[in-house]
Length: 168
Image (cartoon, rainbow, N blue to C red; front, side, top):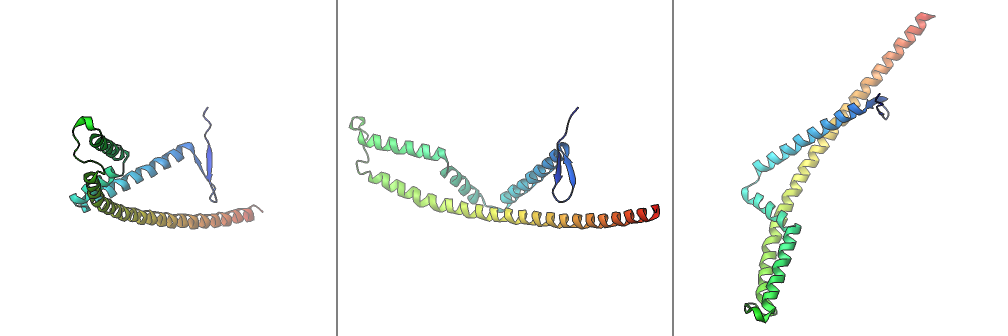
């Protein structure tokens, strides 16, 4: 015999069992997936290819993979130019060519990351507006349901009073 947990929605006296809670969770997850898919589709339709490339560059530039690759590049560059027995020294100390390369990378990477962040901020704002609209609509529906429940409660009170009156 399975014993189900009963959860009451505070203030409403509505009982939900595990099956109903699972169903509600599935419906919410399904809705969230559809909204996310719609936002992704909207993103693909309304962004230029150059913007998507900038987003990918920013995603890579802000990853551990980039840090590891770039740190490895710097270590190899310095070792090649410090160790005399390799005979490959093309940028002796103070590594002026390396500084120039780092400056170029920073000069191009920073605006690309900022462009990507601006687009992400706009997308976040769009998602926040959607969330607000959903919450507002849910609040309206809850208010409507609450009014309906109060109306039903008043009618039940009237019916109860009539029954008590007829029983006397």
